[in-house]
Image: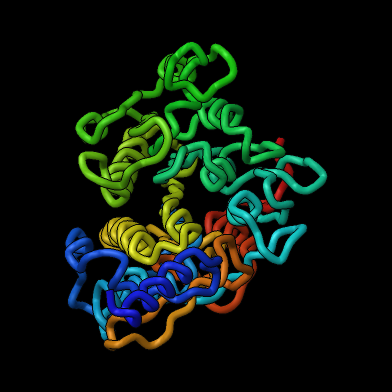
Length: 406
């Protein structure tokens, strides 16, 4: 072997073994171009109409770990330099600060609590202030007003972000308890994974430490339990529990993708409203999370980051399609925090930037927020994450908020 070639090989191996933090990686080495074939980029780049009137429904879309550069990277790969993702066409945009009560860099539990309850808490805590006082979430407040409610995620349904909207625990690790509280809280539509936390410990796939069968308990409480896309597609029930894997979605067929889950949740929540089961305040509140953007960023995996962001963007498109038809739906798109410290520099070609990661954890960078529909204008500019549910509450006429849980 030529000495120069041998030296180059040795150098490449050494570079691969050193700490990758801050190392650059070309996106083109992460995945073939046809890996993005599932995403049909729109040729439109115009801004969606703002919308007006009074808010009836709210769809809050959260890209876990999705910072500005996660969007920029995904956009250039999917649409080119001059194209736009769906979320980039939102008419109202701003920035959001994300620090928690005890750190300049939040985790998903504290960030989720801020986005759900309008209060700061310590990293790891869910649905409560640092002193352990439970606070009402915007989902719980909407439910108390008679609105239908839903949570749609690609993580376990008991993971930090969904948990923050319908549970109150001192530690995000208490997923067994969180699963119990989600069912007890009677959230109308729960779609995600994490079946293991619903199965009794005698089951070989169980992740519980007790004999409670939460699936059986949910069915006794009136839930329709589904595990496949076909079962979800035919569901006709005001309460639906969909758990499509024991732990995490693969986000590959034959599983329903996030956009499909979002469309089906909207349809089910709309049916619940039309049936008149929620008479005092028609409408619904739905939180949709692109959970695995964060996971890809933790691994500093550019190709997976792009794929998960585009899957999330398809879900945003589903929410916007409904909002534009309905004319009474507010859609908000944001993130709980940024993950990976992602930056981009010029590559060999204009549409193939070089990716740089500064960490495998979260960063303290502000994240984007965008909105469409009635009341959207209040989300323009710089705001704190605790402002988001407070503004939603104001638009829905929910007072007081924030407030301690009863």
